[in-house]
Length: 299
Image 1 (cartoon, rainbow, N blue to C red):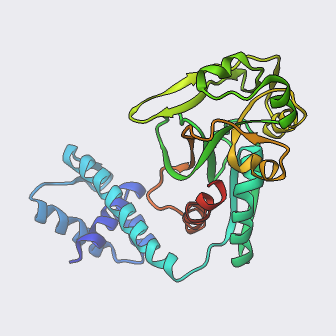
Image 2 (cartoon, rainbow, N blue to C red; image 1 turned 135 degrees about the vertical axis):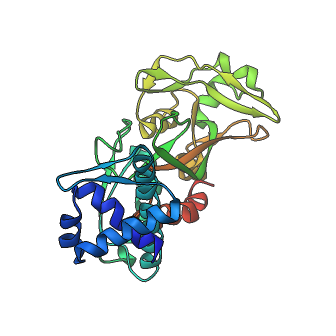
């Protein structure tokens, strides 16, 4: 007899509580259900079920074997689903949460292009800087920048890196001078990014050594990256921002990149999803699309 089929019958017998119920559910005869269970017991040389005319109970070994059979059957279904994915298109709603500016400028255009290519795919995009809970808030995918929390049950894949640069307006530099070294940054006014009540240091790579941390000082604290860039343009101080955000302003001459010889700190960008035996096609294609296209956007 086919071992996988017999495992499925055995698991169903445990779940439903009787051979008669399994026979009805799987369209088998009662004796055939018994044959599948006996096949496993004879093959293993161990009794799985203790049965009487009125009830059945798992043996101690039978309970452990039942749990393993459930895992094996779930993996088999996931393997079959992978093959089905190759012959189908993504469909249904894809719910994604992402940071506001990075999402709008970098992530959303890629996902919108994916939706354009697959008409059966629906998008529900949330652009919010709070850290949403994927399970509680029922998101399929989360995009995070910077350090990740060590949280069980989540899978993370790096999809891009943001290059962080220091910049200021020509008017600010004319008035206060241009810093030439890292240790000169502390004497300048800074426009500070504050997220969730926390001010993070500016980081600068130092080869194989830990990055240099500079805690900026300034009278302006904002939780909006675009607002920080706008404040820098009008001469309010230095700003440490992703290159993709200020690229156009630098090209236009309203901002100047400082310390061009200093290596730029790479802030990792990750896609996160809940651990599952089978990753839905819509999620897998979205992650693959982001991993392929985002590095070109954030470079």
